[in-house]
Length: 443
Image 1 (tube, rainbow, N blue to C red):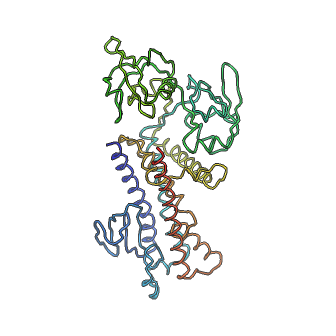
Image 2 (image 1 turned 120 degrees about the vertical axis):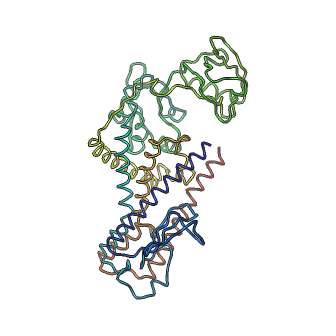
Image 3 (image 1 turned 60 degrees about the horizontal axis):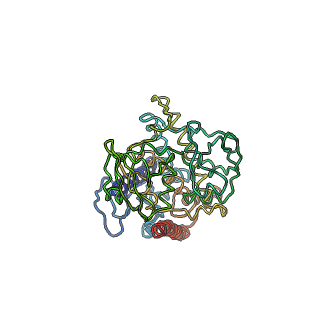
């Protein structure tokens, strides 16, 4: 069920983004009296799920969910319609329009995606506000893994600053280190301030989801609220509302100590010390090969820490949402730049549809859905404006060449460029989804 919910959210989000993107091209084309022959959600090689014609345009739903398209008359696109291009240009065709109008038509999709992202952020801030964990409220310090330990971090360290700059939102610390090429972390340990240097190897590991800096939490109270799909604890007789007070008669102060103890004894029997209706119960359980019991605690983050919530009125949400949108765009451009860095090796972390789908929560959460949809809208806009033939950015590149030189590339050149671009995109698609498959095989 969890996977199905993730898939449904991903498909709905993708559908919204594709429709808005193509609608941007459609609106600008209609504004300049350019005929749009087809408007499709998803691609339709060989057949459509359904279609209907209104005016000069056929609207339809394809069966291949890799995006969507509008087919604009008199334009060399992924359809590679050579027959139409052999005919004399008509006044309602794309190729007959002034360069500046063609440029606006081609940037319409990107513009609409960016506008959509800004509007969603405004709506989110107005509807839900913004809740986060202030760094100063991480009262138990941090917890990290062996990668964090290798650079000098220790569980219980309190983050004071990054490059001597205080980061208000605790969950922005890791991204700030990666995106802004930070060099040092200042922490408080045993009443002393310690300066920790950040090597490039640490950034490489963070991009592989290691070396994360998380808030340390106490172990108790650990009240069982639910069980995982694979739950040795449930099979051994643990019940909902049982309180786990220790393992092998060992009582833990911190949750990371409990995790570490299980990791050392994965696939080996342990005795769970349970408090059930005021009585002590001991149950023998063998953790999974990953060192998991398959249980969840009822404690939420706001039960442990003092979270900060900022509420916005409608008028306040507009500038705040726009500001959040532009900051997200800036952060994504920094992330994108990392892909081309030989030092960070971020290209190894590229993912395809499995990676994108997995970021959606396993339960239907509208706030998370719209946050992710806004972010994906920004990704779609940035990716589409890249100067690669077959993308909007490729068409824009050739139009700018025309503006500067006064000469239009030949139809044959544009056709070959379109084919080349499609091959490049196919290669990237195979590479990104290949990374997904390799990651699944390595689990």
